[in-house]
Image (cartoon, rainbow, N blue to C red; front, side, top):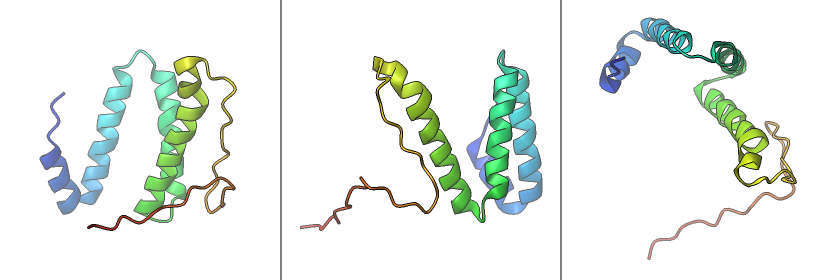
Length: 109
C-alpha cells in the first residue's frame, strides 16, 4: 500500500469530502487485510462514535487521546510487568482529578 502524506494533506485542504471518503476506504482495506477483522471493526466503530459526539476537531482529538490512554492503562500497561494492582483513573471530560499535577511554566534564561 503506497501512502504519501503530502498527497493526503493536499486532498484534505482542497476536497475534505473526498478526503473523508478516501480515508474510510483506506481504513476498510486495512481492516479487511487483517486476521483480526472483528476486533478492528469494533474499535473503528468506537472511534467513529467518539468522533461523531465531538463538538469540534480538538474535542475529537482529546476524546480519542483519552480512549487510547484508557486502553493503554487498562489492558496493555498491566501486562508489561504484571502490574495488576495498578489503579486506573476513571477519565471523564471536564472532571477535575484529585491528584492532578501542577504545571510549572518554563522560563528561558
